[in-house]
Length: 187
Image (cartoon, rainbow, N blue to C red; front, side, top):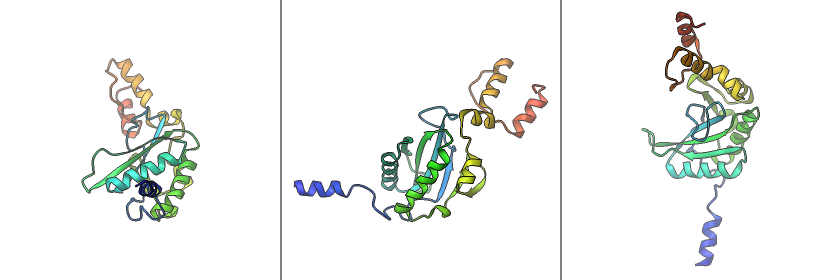
């Protein structure tokens, strides 16, 4: 019995090709809210994985392998297509693009997806782009201030407070919200 337990524990980790054809090669960034902090402080990566067990294996692989990962988790339920989401949270800083590239390079061993076959989408804005260091540096706000400047959450909250409107929802700073501010005479 002792020998069987040792053998079982020995085989618990992911091995090469274990997640082949199970992980979707589209990486989504900041599409979901952070569960551990403010969105301007945390970057949230998400992957689609076929099946709960492979998703759990991927979470364990990521949590044990990267000290920069704040948290990794599997969605509580499956999506309409039967897939699960894996969420990875990390601190928003200028190292994030390199950390993501390292993760994607390492995932090749278990997924057989080469780094040049990955695509990335940021916050469901625009179209998917090839995943590389340049696209990540362009897409991801790398500081809280940059995130706030790009999506204007604090500025909008200040405008609501001045207008006497309850501050409870956050709208992004974009052409539409800017046109509303201009039309309202706020800007």
